[in-house]
Amino acid sequence: MNKVPQLDLPFPAVGDKEGDNVPPGLPGIVDTHVHVFPGPVFKALWEWFEKNAWPIRYKGTTPELLEYLFKRGIDHVVALQYAHKPGIARYLNQYMIDLCLNFSGRITGLATVFPGEADAAIILEEAFSAGLQGVKLHAHVQCFDMNSPDMDPIYEVCSTNGKPLVMHVGREPKSESYMCDPYELCRADKLEQVLKDYPELKICVPHLGMDEYTAYQCMTETYDNLWLDTSVACADFLPAEKHVRFDEMRIDRIMYGSDYPNIPYAWDREIKKIQKAQLSNASMAKIFRENALQFFSIADC
Image (cartoon, rainbow, N blue to C red; front, side, top):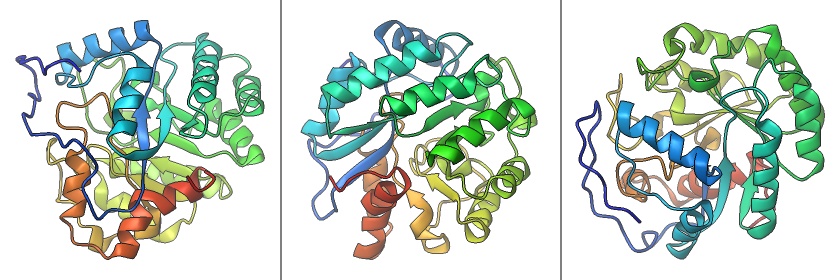
């Protein structure tokens, strides 16, 4: 893996030491937030990050990046990607289908689509038929309003097929380089309306809903179809309204995710942070494994 470049960015690199293996004493880990892309897309994405956000610590081909985690003791990976423009979703979905075949049993792949593009529901039906197990969307990049009619075909096809939806609709991290304002598109009350309208649709909001932690925490108590993942939110890296307190959360709705490889710190940083929370063994098992198996319908791995 490449060394972390030292750049003058809004969020500089963190030079923390990485472990060679998953820390001892933890249950088998499912990482629910790992990005995969074809090489050219990864290259463009990293260039954007290193110009506008933070240095990328881990680079390589997608197979190399996945093997890096598996060799260090991660049991299973939920692989995510998102279409940044109309017309490329089928290409990305086929890439994910092939990746799942090559890493049979070790990754769960999600489909993507660009909200509002023609045949969005058909694109997802095709992806589900080929074995993809959910959908990933990113409001900051795709600039969709989650309450727009363009979203209804996506919500409906996921609900009908019993497939979960992972949506980055938390408003952070905000960047002037996005083509839209996340603070206009991404609010907890907007997501609450989706939860009400589609009670059978399982939704995961990454980053614990950063930075509306309190609102999302409260919604998990009210809506059984909402889950959150921990990615970046537990790294003590980005500014936040409050420190994450797992003892105040509904533990059966929290899943571990890393946001690897698009991170500027050690791959296991958040694992260690969560481990230090001194949760019960049962709670640790839920966060690191059991909740993910339930949410993504993963056969025990």
